[in-house]
Each structure stands twice: as C-alpha cells, then as structure tokens.
Amino acid sequence: MKFTIGQLKKSAYNKPFAFSGEVDVSELEKMNNDIREIKPVQVSGDCTIQGDQFIFTFKVTGEMILPCARTLVDVVYPFEIKTTEIFSSSSYYTEEETDTEIHPIDGEVLDLTPYIKENILLEVPFRVYSEEAKDLPDQKGNGWEVVSEEKTEKTIDPRFKKLESLFKDNDQEK
Image: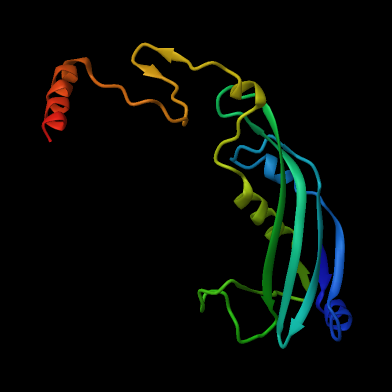
C-alpha cells in the first residue's frame, strides 16, 4: 500500500484522505513465527496532514492460522487491529535522534506495508487453543499433570488432620 507525497498533500490538504484496499502479507508465513497461513488483509483508514507530519489512522482486519498450543492442529485466529502511524517529511528529522514513534519518509513514496506487517506480528497471541483441546480431559503422567485454572477446594493434609481438632477446642472455650 503505497502513496506518493504529492498525492497525499493534494488529497489531504483540506480534509482527511480516506483509503482502503487489500494487502498481501504472505511473507509473514516464511518468517520464524507461529503463523502457518495468512490471507491478504483488508486495510482501511485515513490520512491527515499537520505541518510536515502525515498521520495515518487505519484498521487492519484478517485471519491467520496458528498452531494449537496442546495439539498442534490449525486454529483460525481472526484479528482486527486499530493503529496510528506518524510519518515526517522534514529533512531535519532522523529516526536515530529521537525516541518517538515518528517515522521519516525517504524519497517521494510512503509505503505502509512494513508497518502493517509489524502491527500484525505484534498481534500474534502467545497461545491459542483449538476447540478439541479445550474438551480434552485433564491429563496426568509420571510426575506431571495438566492443571486447569479453575478454583479447586482446599484440602487438608491428612498429617495435620489431628491438629484441626485442637483449633476446634480453642474456639469452643471462647
């Protein structure tokens, strides 16, 4: 998704410049991450100009296929990302000088594709579970077990069971 600086200055001079389209981000499948498949994503948003800065506010929607954390089967993970990216055409600005999230524009063409890919990579969840994995019974092995996050009742160690009677006697005396 590329825009020329001239096109943006002309279109976004008085009002926000709206854009939408489909972006192929299949390169993400080849990177060292969990994305097994990703179809082209839909990008829509607008651009406004403030001085030398171009402010892009856009939404990225799509689906990626990730491996299940328990069974490694494919899990379809839909996503919707809303983000804002700021670019500067100022010749006095360099990215190394500041710690801000303002990106310099090199040349006359602004390419949003790398920033779309970056935001998608930031959206990849740490773990996903398939419906089949959620229905699996608790699993146990020699010295290990899968523990659910559900609350369990507190059980008293049988070695301390006799001590419990001492506390009951003290409560009755009071």
